[in-house]
Length: 392
Image (cartoon, rainbow, N blue to C red; front, side):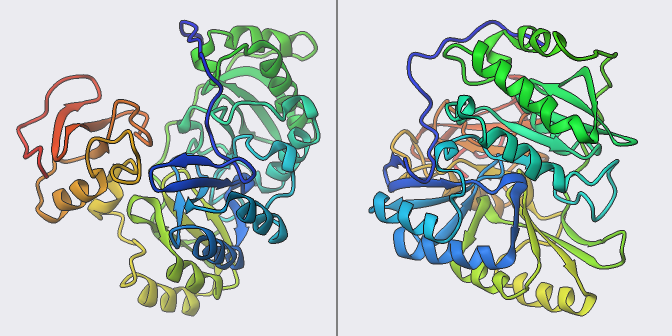
C-alpha cells in the first residue's frame, strides 16, 4: 500500500470557487457536486454561470468535477455561485469532490450509497481540521461494482453487501469494516488521520504513509482481512433499464465539454443527474417516451450514446492555446486523428506536456506532445505501438 515518499515544494493549485487557478485562457473555477449528484436544472444554472463569467461551456474532469474556464471576474463568479446555492461549505471549497457510483440505487450494486454520500460530505465539511486537505486528495464511495474504486481513491468506502462497508486507502481495501450507520464515521476517522500525517504530500499513495493512516484507524476499530477489489466494469453508456423499469441515459461528452446550449436543454428534462469520472452524465428516472425523445434530440447535438464511439476511447488534456504549458493543440490533434482513422485501437490519451493531465490510470496509448503537431507515442508500459501518424 505504500510507495516512496514524494515531497512537494509548494501547495497544490487545485481551484475552487473562491480561489480560481489562472490559465492561459483565464481563470478556472471548480464547483463541487458531492457524488456528482444534482438535478438537471442545476445544469442550466451552470450554463448561465459559464456564459456570464467564462467561455460558455461547462467542463467535466476525469475526477468528476465541474469547471468553468475563462473567468475574468473571480469575485463576481464566486458571488454568483454562492447565490445559486452551489457553495454550501465555503471553508471546504477546495476539498476534492466525492466520487460515487453513478447508477447506485437505480441499477445493480451491492447497496444504494446515495444517502451515504451526503452523510460523508456533511461529516467532512463539519470538521475544520479537514478544510486544508489537498485538492488532489480523492474521496470515493463505491456501491460494490468497482467503478469508482478503479480511480484509486485516497480515501473511500466499498459496499460489501449486507449493510457492511470497507475502508479504502490509496485504492486498496484495508480490512477495516463498519456497518451502514458507522460507515461515514469510519471514513471521517481515516480523513483526520491523513490530515494529521500527510506532511506536504497531496496523495496517500505518494506519501508512503498509507500504513500509518491505517494504523491510526486500527487504534480504535476492529480489523478484518482485506476484501479483494472487484474488477472495474466498463463505464455506462447508452440506454440502461433501471431496476424499477424506468430508463437511465448515460451520455458521453467529447473531451468532457458540455456546451451551454446542451446544458440548458438537459435542464428541461426535470430528472436527477449524475456526473461521472468518465467525462459523462447519467440522466436518471426517465420514462421511455421522454428518454426516446431525449436521444433523438441530443445525439445530433453532440451527446454520445453509442458505446462503440471513438470519442469515448480517445481523451486529451486541455492543450494549447488554453494551457500555457502545453506544446500542442491536443484536442484538435486528437479530433483530427479520430476523423482520419489514424489512431491505434484501444484507449488513447493526448497530453500537451509531461504532467499528462486527465490520463487514464492504466491501459492506454500515450501521445505526449514534443512540439506543435508532433508526439512521442508509447503505450503505458513504455513499449512502442505499431507505427501511426504522430501528426494526427
